[in-house]
Image 1: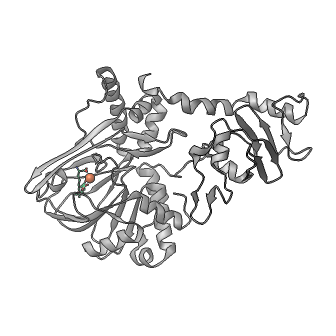
Image 2 (image 1 turned 120 degrees about the vertical axis):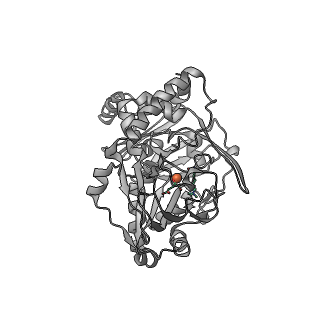
Image 3 (image 1 turned 90 degrees about the vertical axis):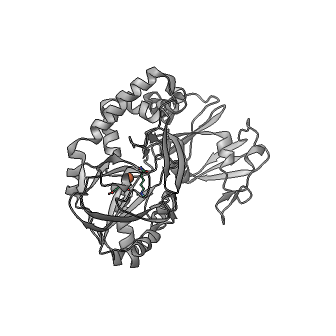
Amino acid sequence: MWCGRLAWLFKRPCQLSGSTRHRSLWLARDRRTVPAAAARWHHTAPESLKCAWQLHGDHLELRYADTLMRFDFVWLRDHCRSASCYNAKTNQRSLDTASVDLGIKPKAVRVDETTLFLTWPDGHVTRYGLEWLVKNSYEGQKQQVMHPRILWNAEIYRQAQVPSVDCRSFLETDEGLKEFLQNFLLYGIAFVENVTPTKEDTEILAERISLIRETIYGRMWYFTSDFSRGDTAYTKLALDRHTDTTYFQEPCGIQVFHCLKHEGTGGRTLLVDGFYAAEQVLRQAPDQFELLSKVPLKHEYVENVGDCHNHMIGVGPVLNVYPWNNELYLIRYNNYDRAVINTVPYDVVHRWYAAHRTLTAELRRPENELWVKLKPGKALFIDNWRVLHGREAFTGYRQLCGCYLTRDDVLNTARLLGLQA
Ligand SMILES: C[N+](C)(C)CCCC[C@H](N)C(=O)O
Ligand SMILES: O=C(O)CCC(=O)C(=O)O
Ligand SMILES: [Fe+2]
């Protein structure tokens, strides 16, 4: 397949390390029935089954805590945590990786109950905690997700009864903030209640968790249906589900909405978990999922209204996954802002349209739609890399304020509070 050119890079090691061929090999070695050859198993203690290692021509194989790991020698030299290679005060590497001989091989290897010791040809000694290796190895890492999440449809979200956090608790206590962020990370949406309905108070909320991402729409924005900007958002029309700023190279991570006023009817907000829908596509049609994650697309924002002149272009696939574990981290979905497709040939285009249709059908399932009416005092935070939003047409005067946040800074706050983000 044209787009799977690099797939072998990631697939090959998983297939090898998970194979039963290796498991039986372990048992054989543990019973010491295999003659000592160049690649010979070594154990930490005579009968220890917990840890064993074996030196190969171009890598070290290590079994610890039920994880079979393979380490490249350059990797082992590069990650050395000794004082001369790594500055523990700044958590930065001091070693010049380019100075490592690409053909390097340890001169001596020793393992005790907790630590792997490697002596390099120049006499330098590297020590690795075995637990550290499990946590940081490719094999240990690929069993884990980067971002634990609960994927939802309307029923799952309602059943979970995720509480809104009170504004004071959010602003004044670490527990309140942590609870809010945990919910946000798990579900991709979270609410703060009892907020004073002004732009200034909404800004204070935003600044509690992140730096505000200033964009062509400003820092904190207000908007009504006055068509002050050349975009459908600034009208009374319905907006189908979408993510925002797909036309940025890095779409905004989080969107904050606070409805300050609505005197009229309609205008409910629609929320759909894009990752839940994408998961359904993966189950039904893995090839289509792969296509959506490989075909690069452009989104575009061309504006020429009043004094506003903008032309933004963002490139990337609809589904973005980490290649080592296929975990989704970003969905770009905005049919209004999708640009001319000119990045793939016609036959791929056709298959892409079919895949896009499957995803759209999932996103449009009524059972996946969560409808909420935003009211003054209730601020909504949306993970714009995961949850799609839309809005029902409305009548009357409706004013929303909000801002975008930088994702890195939200995750930073979450990590500092001890959350996995
Ligand atoms: C939120 N705010 C009203 C400021 C901007 C709306 C941006 C709308 C654009 N079509 C997009 O989806 O990115
Ligand atoms: O008016 C709304 O509720 C949302 C409009 C919208 O999609 C946006 O501003 O990004
Ligand atoms: Fe939007």
